[in-house]
Amino acid sequence: MEEKKKVVALLSGGLDSRLAVKMMQNQGFDVTAVAIKTPFCDFDCGRGCGFEIRGTADMLGVDLKTVYLGDDYIEMLKHPKHGFGSGMNPCIDCRAMMFKAGKQVMEDIGAEFIISGEVLGQRPMSQHGPALRTIEKEAGLEGKIVRPLSGALLPKTEPEERGIIKRENLGMIRGRTRKEQLKMAEQFGFVDPPNAGGGCLLTDPKFSIRAKDLFKHTETPTTNDIDLLKIGRHFRFDGNTKLIVGRNKDENEMLKALALPGDTLFETKDHMGPISLLRGDDSQNNLKVSSDITFRYSDAPKDSTGTMMVQKNEAHSEIPAGAISEPEYLKYML
Ligand code: SF4
Image 1: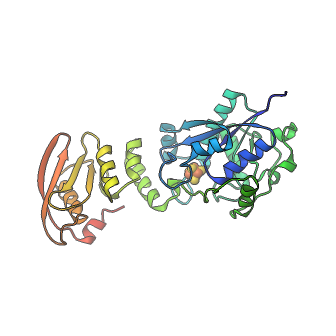
Image 2: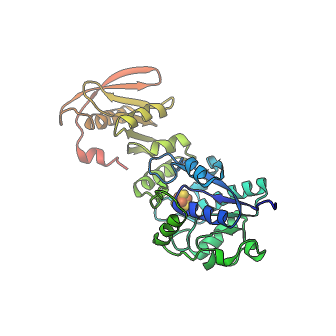
Image 3: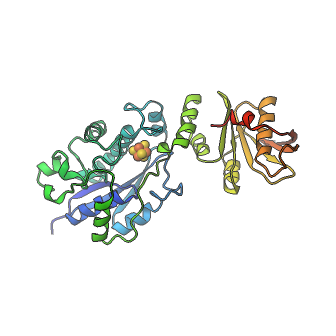
């Protein structure tokens, strides 16, 4: 029996990439999925876009390889060649990096080409014709990326020229509506198709403000800096100094876990309240403002005063906590 031709698929966990995989399997290809993690998407933020990536791969019956784009991704984010979208999303550079990672797998396993669930016109920055071509070029994959859902609307790819895929087996989906995709999901017997994506933190306006602030003030942010962006309320005191205030028990625990040597932790002594983390200059003034902001978010009666427990490395101390007016603390808030 002739061996099936191999194809690599970028799998996001969303509906579109699942459909793309299924379309290729139905055309007799052996699909290997590549899932890309970045510091901004670990499939585990709770937004549901890629949370069940392992389950998705199993459901589709494909091998799954996970690639982590860490420091390289952060480096790219400092100055993406093709700029940002409406938030801090460098979609064209991001997709090019993802396809490059996919290309590596493609070469490793001897696959013919690479597919993705991209739909023409679905996303404003990266899914129009010129952007799709730029991404291919940047990834060194000209003619080798097949987008099965919209393939019949796009220029011929190399596998099509070679006759290993046929235009009549490619889709003609365009735009943001998901009607066609939901119909296909039903035909393919997908139970409970995932909701529309949108899980990328870099497209989230609030997160983008924090991320822009971080990159403005820190030469090369670490993944620890980025993990902090995902939780709490953020206050910028000066170019070097930030306070992050937990919003619930889980975030308080995460702040303790993310604290590095040199960070200062705050906790209200006689009332329930948040944990806060001060990173940067622990001047008397920054300690006082941090203490007052932390106290402001505790259950202590408004305008009262109290005691703040402060921990830096192994040293514990207590300092007074006072009332702080709304305009006073809001001026620091990101
Ligand atoms: S939305 Fe986020 S993950 Fe998707 S291409 Fe843009 S930056 Fe990358």
